Image (cartoon, rainbow, N blue to C red):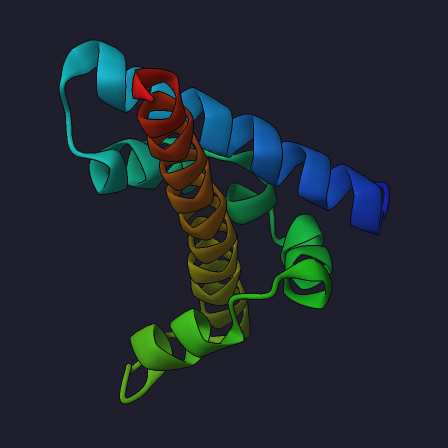
Length: 113
């Protein structure tokens, strides 16, 4: 059975995923949202339903989950959990990645001064 994901583990993983997505996006000159999708879609916390509930307990992306699942026809409870976990984790990674890019941009601007 899967071990519960702690608050710290969740947010450390969000940080790690966001860092990697930003790096890949810049390195490959690719869209950040594509990198986030690729990284999160294949993540074990999304693939394995034993982790889905823990993601939902930790995520701060409730609005993203609601927005993407509203009106969806979902085939069963496990599929709904997996989709919700995907949108929750992707939302948190996206928010953190955007913050990283903002901070990077601010650092670049202050270096120019």
